[in-house]
Figure 1 (cartoon, rainbow, N blue to C red):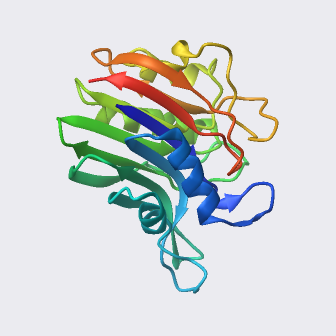
Figure 2 (tube, rainbow, N blue to C red; figure 1 turned 180 degrees about the horizontal axis):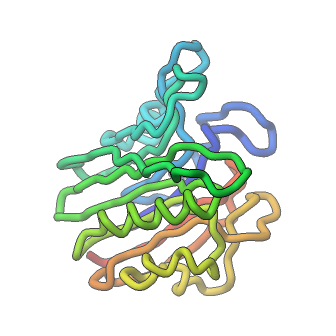
Length: 232
């Protein structure tokens, strides 16, 4: 099976700075993944320009099973969060809100985030998330992920807004395998045209055999996708 993590920046074509569902669908098709985790997705809101973006990508890619997990409503009316496309049947799925830090310890931008938790056919658990920018947000996100890791056949992926040497990732690293270990050469994910950092991840539980992993040179959104091929 192949998994893909992709922050689409609400399907914004990075080079042309316009909403472009076709280029996102082409990127997904090129990676040929069975399960795709999507970050920064919009859904139908009050303003007509906000559409069911996960549903649109489902139609364009032909991947029928899909889900949108709402983290917030921008301006109180426009849903925004994570999404999933899956060639496997989705047996159950839930949206888990990551607790906001209280009190907030930093002066940076804060935003409520969530984890999309899905159980797929074959007893596979998938956790998809997009972590906040501040360390206290990231600490809460890591804790939420750890609380929801399944004991076997578990995949955790998303834009974590942390570089690989960040010690806040340690609780996940202690329980799971970072598929980046299987890159054939060093790979970076952001920004997509000239990447200089890696902040996107696919982790797997220790019982999952990793065959290969990659961050392909695809410039569609502001992040390059991250893929991992595994045996379950």
